[in-house]
Image (cartoon, rainbow, N blue to C red; front, side, top):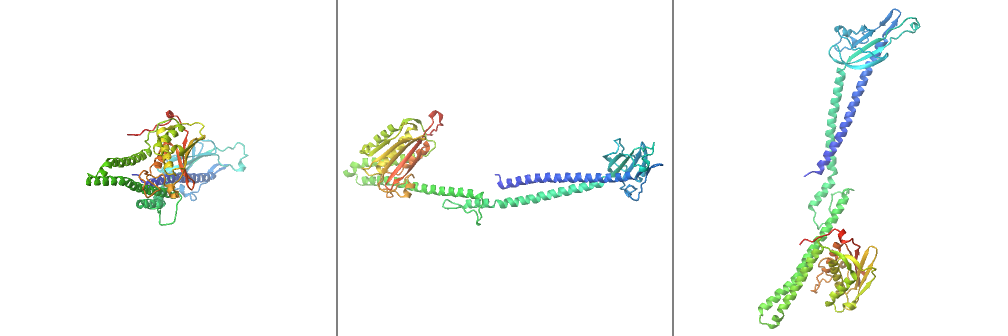
Length: 487
């Protein structure tokens, strides 16, 4: 498993190290170039000084050199060298060359009054650098107008050892390398400290998550009151997740208890009925209705289980949808007709207001039939027997809207309204009614989500409630992705 801390540390180390190496290389190259330039300047100064010692007189060219003023050209072990030519003949050699009679310094043809630098090997075998100059000796002003008097140009080569320069450059390079290594080590230490300290809030959040449970309302990030712009959104989202998890846990506990309660009653009835029948097998009053009572109780249990399975299927993404053109007005009439066996006054109580310009819509018939059945059934059951239930059908540019409005037998509180679509929730907490199980609206909501419908409801008056279903326009079936249910 990779570590985000280690990755950040290594990445920052690599990046900063690369920048430092580039900076130190630039500094090293700049220092080397500066030292070379200064060395060449010093060599140029020596050469120019020696040139000034060349004088032209009526008797000829002279070189007025005094070794005591420039002892580096003497016989020391670290001596420098110079050699002067006029024409092809050697005019003057430094005293340091006297130990090397056959040695000649570098000489090269070039334009007048120009100079070149070259790396050479000195006569004593040391590494050095030489400056070769080709110049005209300085002629006094008194002799410049003398007819027929010309001065032949001269070559001057000055050679100096570079061993000291090399040692200095080695020291500089070594110092820079050691400094670079120390800076990288210190930088790595600083990076580790900074990143470790910067990730403290994230580590505290991680430690808090290790001990959090869904009963907590907030997740403490640290004992301090500091909040960070990057951490706070994570904290808020985690708080939301904990809150949602808590709600799901409570809902799961409630649904489990409600399922047990719903099934406990018919099971208890079956047990009691069977015990009585076993104890009094000859009692005609019990035996005459025993089979029918068992069947009725079993059918109630089957209804509960079937509705629970339907709820699970309705909340599944694998629910099969087969969209086809359907006449909504005709479907409403068929649902009303199908519910007539439960409500013999349904035709008088149901009032359909049709404002559709076109009653045909592309929709899954099973889903819409189930939704309408549950909405109509709830509206008729939970309203006064003589009250009217209004069904409105309307259309707009976005799709079709179907609303069901009815009067309430008992008023609903805000808490009841929010929990109305929770599975097995009933506003009648006594649960004396064995015909209703609190699954209808939960099924409607889940099926609406799967189909992409917009299901909403709310009180339009203190004793009236309205349920609305908006069906957006859908693309033809062959242009839509198909979803299949797995058996």
